[in-house]
Image (cartoon, rainbow, N blue to C red; front, side):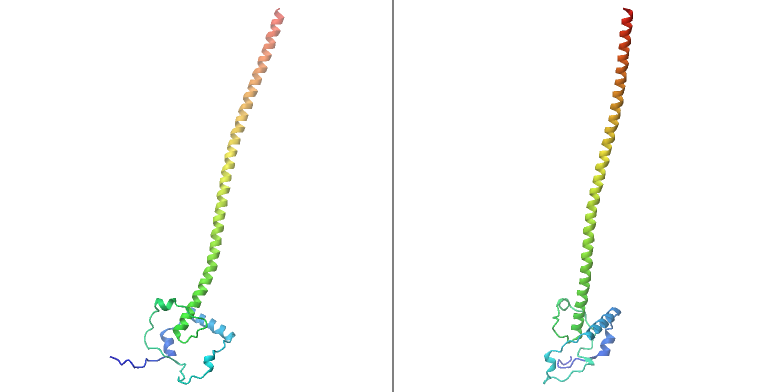
Length: 187
C-alpha cells in the first residue's frame, strides 16, 4: 500500500506532448488560435496583479498531473460548459474549451447548410407541385383536344349527311318536276 500523503508525480510539458500528440487539424487550430490571440491583447485579471503570499511560484515547464495514461472523458465532463470569463488553468479545461469552440463552429456551419438544404427541399416540393399541376393541365388539354376532334369528326359526318340529304332532295325535286312535266305533256 502506498501512503496517501505521497505527492503525485509531475509530468513535464515535453512528456505531456509526447503522450498526447496533436493531429494535423489540432495543430492548425492551435496556429489559428495563436495568430488570433497575437492580434488581441487580453487584459489580465486583478488577481494576477496581486502577489500570492502563501503560494510558491509554479513552474511553467511542468504540469501537476499524475504520470499515467490519460483516461477518456466521462459524459458529465463532456456536457458541462465552460464560462468564457473563467480562467483556463489546466490542459483538460483548455481541451474542453477548444472542443466547445469546434462544436459551436461545426453547429454554425451545419445550421447554415441545413437552412440551405431545407430551402432547396421546399423549392423542390414547390416545383414538384407545379409540375403536377402542369401535367394535370396537359391531360385536361389533351382530353379537350380529343373531345374537340370527336366533335369535329361528328360535325363532318353531320355535314356530309346533310349534304347527302340535300342532294337527294334536289334529285327528288328534279324528279318531281320531270314527272309534272311529263304529266303536263300527256294531257
